[in-house]
Image 1 (cartoon, rainbow, N blue to C red):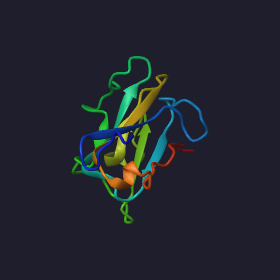
Image 2: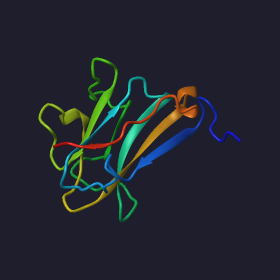
Image 3: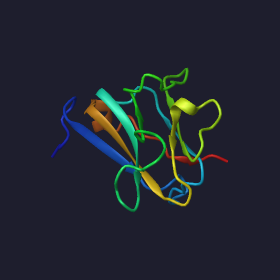
Image 4: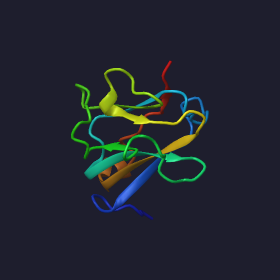
Length: 133
């Protein structure tokens, strides 16, 4: 039974661990590269949550979210997006950065509003979140 309808409603993916299956550490910096053409008819968003409260992560940023509605988000030449998570913005990537809090774990929810057929058929896939060394 298909529960998601093409181009209607919303659908979500969550990530609680990095590519090595370790919980996210707010004192470290991570990166995810979203492949080109995120599969959302309306818009998409990546949002940070506090692992303990399950609420939005409280940081110096007004909203801990980035997505297609952010006019300042920088797209790569191939249409992909690099999004960073860490206590400080990597130089040159300030517009594609979400702040984390040292000694606090977090997780993300990736939302697609108006999920396209590529999302529903799993033809478009999120990459793992990688620790930046």
